[in-house]
Length: 102
Image 1: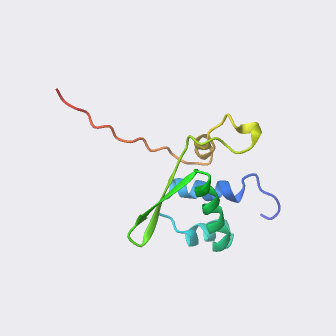
Image 2: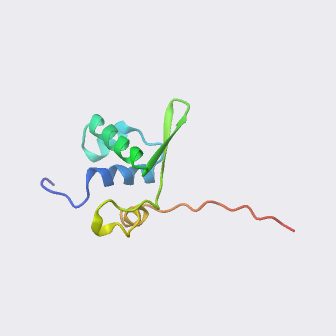
Image 3: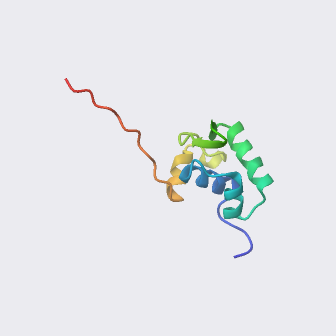
């Protein structure tokens, strides 16, 4: 389907990273239909502004997201990026809390 889209490439990249933390830039580019260079630029934007963090695991990168970051447009500054990601299919993983038996 050509023409305009409701969701920006930045949101699509963030969504894929949230769903698959070990995804590569090449895989993201192929899924979205943009160049790998454009994908890397978007990841750098997201990293610079704190939406994404990168951790080196051997030769690969594992991505993390901060779902508490606000959306960037002034009309949605009161909404968190995690809310948008949930609408786009992301399932928030809750950290397991170890219980201490008495």
